[in-house]
Length: 174
Image (cartoon, rainbow, N blue to C red):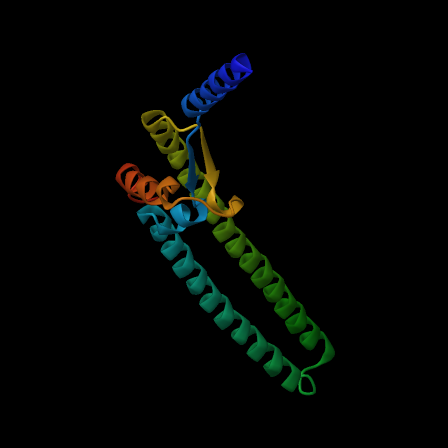
């Protein structure tokens, strides 16, 4: 019995010490928050929103002009001869097709710029996170959206934003 108690105490002590030495540090980071709240992320978002709103306004005006031109053409349908009406209708159709392709290209460009800005931010965040992991001996960084709960001390989001703002103050989108 004496040996059993000694064995139990030694085993418990070894397991406890091993557990203390082998604890892994886990950190949590809200990637979406970092992308949206960093200086570069906010600047890119503001630029893209302004660009989008400008294009929407421009296309709205073009659309109104095309509708007005269509209404004028329909009003003149009885006055114009068939060939002349057909030529004007074909010209209007061509304008509409050009408008649609220009609009699609403009909105696609904004989508491409958004994707490029995200890639630039992610490429800048990765080395910062890697350096932070090495400095603080962290085993794993998990995105906050994939966690249910945890200690506030494990959240490194604000620290990463501060470091990202120093490394990448803005993104140049054209």
